[in-house]
Image (cartoon, rainbow, N blue to C red; front, side, top):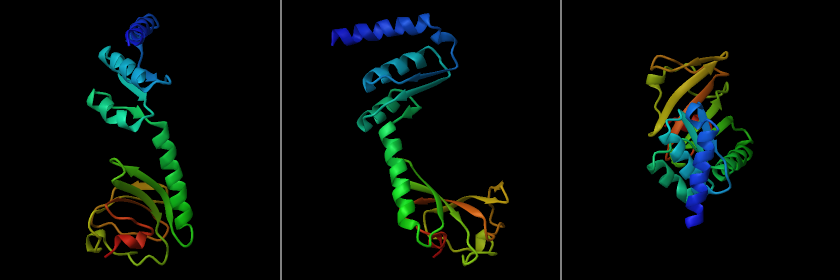
Length: 179
């Protein structure tokens, strides 16, 4: 164990010699999660404005966050999210209009992008008059390449891209948001 601490101290000296104190961002990408966490904490302590640590082991991510690191990249999680999105897109490809899927908040919430088709029964109805299922939020509408932050007075039009946030419910189609 003593050798690991000596290596970390030497890395700290090297980072300072290389100008860590004057950088705008620092990314730790070594092959050891613990080392990435320690070096990133050191960079944060030196007031580097943006610090990113690569952490492969999921069980260490919450520990790193508790130690004050706010930007953590987990390649395995990123790959699994991509595979999940791809599998979900394949599953939904027949007659579905799911464009994009992201999982957030420890995979408890999905953010989906749908294309409102001409057959969507919510077209032309004010959002305040739509009866949405529980735990559904309409976060945005993209119409003619313009982003709309929706209010209760906005209405869906055919061809709109609709950003939906859903917690605890699986959506396969935009119509699934309606009661």
